[in-house]
Amino acid sequence: MVSSTNARYEDWANLSEEEYAASKRELIDTTLDALEKYVPHCRERIALVEAATPATFQHYTKHLAGASFGTKFEGLAVSRGLPEQVRGLYHAGSVGIIMSGWLGAINYGVIVANDVDALLVK
Image (cartoon, rainbow, N blue to C red; front, side, top):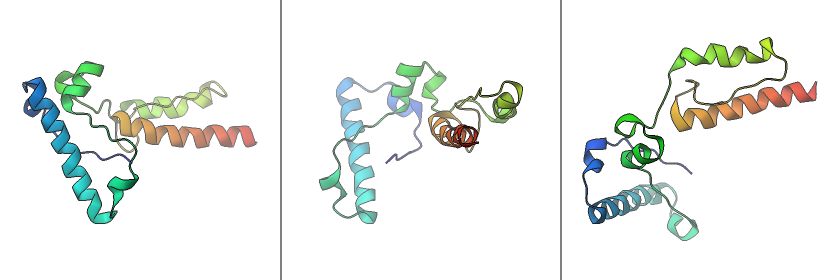
């Protein structure tokens, strides 16, 4: 399961290590509290919980101010058209399908996997 919560880089960027860890723990706990309303006793069934903040995205991706979403719709037509140019060449990534960034890449990956499957089944 993925839970996405809006966050401001400024709220995370200048915290001490201890404050950052405590704030991350609070984010996890409040998210699980909200989930428990819909999935009672979910904590008992969860094996691993991880949280990423804008500071996490800044650290690993070097995106300005920890932006977690990338391109918009500009690349979609080019990406979708690749198999028409070169049979069997597919692209999956963050090109604005549904939304951009990591969530768009996951969703677009499913769409492209279905396209590849359709080609292979022919």
